[in-house]
Length: 159
Image (cartoon, rainbow, N blue to C red; front, side, top):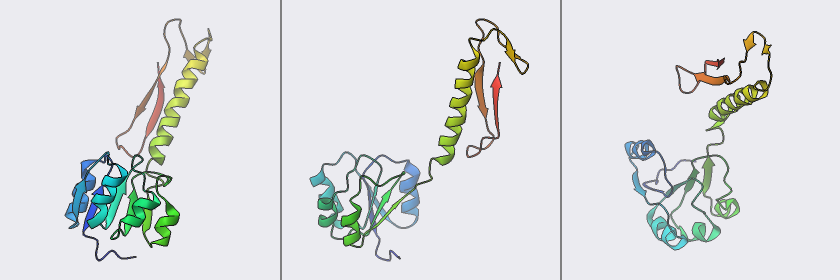
């Protein structure tokens, strides 16, 4: 679906400033207004073809039906539970999200939490495990390092 008539986009939740910059560099007019009531959101959308939300903005059927020019709703994050998909589909409005946006960060956090759990499991033991000797009052921590923010290259237990 092409958006030849997409000229103005409302960002109704807090996003990184680079989002606005990318849209503006693409020739779009961007309006940023947060914490809007349903009535205020409807009023702002009267001359917008696009809407970008996160979790706070609720895009209900009332909002969708009142937004006469709306062509696309972008959800910056996973899930679209705050967007009435049936109403959007009836009006031919495309709804998009970023389902895998946090996958790597979630995996890195999980690995870090496993290492923290590992240190708590080992703490009560008086001996060592695989050459790791624990002394009373000295617990291992976890160390996550990476040269690239998108890829954790080394995860290790530091004593």
